Length: 445
Image (cartoon, rainbow, N blue to C red; front, side, top):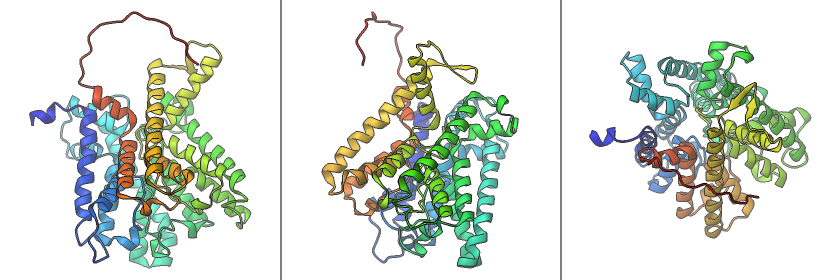
């Protein structure tokens, strides 16, 4: 017990994810989990459990054709736990059982839920729980309008709930293997109801619990929103609409060829939203043009917002670095936006996170290129999808070697826990002496 108390908040969050993954992989190894009589290898079970808990969506076997109902329920449970964060889930029980939450628990929950202050943590937990239930419930209700007529009442309801949770948690797992293995939502390219429902769930789940709380308090009064909320909403809007326009321009004669105008527009919006970081697809990703592939890689790497169900380096990280570049170009000392200045510490953290992600991604790509016979385009797409916890693939996941699967597992875990968490986990308990070294200038650039 004493050793547990010595762990930092970040270390507890990391360990909680590892525990969920290990329990999930053990359950998926059970004979009751797989449809085939052949036992599932532990590496495939570990890969699937990591992908589900880290809400990624990369799979080595089609979810519908490979896993039984029990296995699918294990997967969707890990998705729900991984999407909200294990510590958030545990804290929910404390809140709803009216148990007092101490300062240490508040700090832990603050970091897990992605809020910036300990005050109002209990109210935030309630809003997270109720908001999740409402949004996933509404999503399931809308999807059932389409799925019940297609699959029957029980199967239609189950499919609606499964895909609503998967979309809201930005997980990318689907059961559309009932039509064709690994097909995702390609048979619903022109379906407005399914597309808009999934898009709404992905966006709402990806903007972050802190933003929910702010919007809940201040309604539609943008001026009263906190700076974090304003940056998230503006950056997300730019990425969604800008990404949709570029996707349409790049892909109208490539992966979107043969579609009518309405289908192209719908597929473009979906192709802009889903890479951040849901992983569903309504077009064949292997048919993407080089420009479309690069755009999708960029959207995947940026991902969603802090304290959300999404992964990636986060919208605020990119926004802060972009604003710092503008300030540097104007030779301004302070970084200002919406009549507020941003702490320079945030710029340092943003640069560190991006550098950490890119270096990790670079080494992973080099390793995968050395191990696998696939092209650079496919490998970069796969590795980016893993580290950004997206789940999109050009069809090479199931063909990877054991060592490559382990690399992808590490990338998925790293991407969900976050680069900043890894840095904090290694440094939180260190004691720094008040020693300042002499300063000396160097040439940069």
